[in-house]
Image 1 (tube, rainbow, N blue to C red):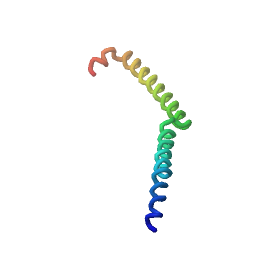
Image 2 (image 1 turned 180 degrees about the horizontal axis):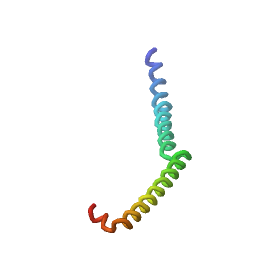
Image 3 (image 1 turned 60 degrees about the vertical axis):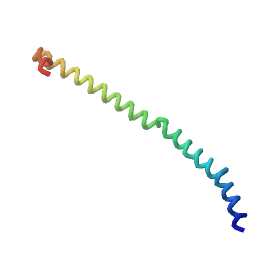
Image 4 (image 1 turned 30 degrees about the vertical axis):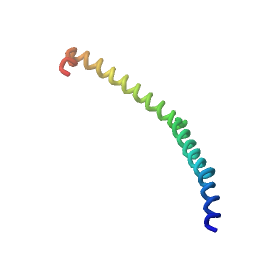
Length: 75
């Protein structure tokens, strides 16, 4: 009696359960690998912030260079 139940269970696990599990995690992996709209917005904000900070650093360097032209030689 146990042999009758074990065979369909093993076949079900091998041909239904295992492929379902593999395909499930493949789908999860593919959706996680793409950027969401929130991620794109965050990247845009970070890019704008980095550009503004670079502009500020350029301005600060220009002001310091106007006060002391040899300030970079000490670094």
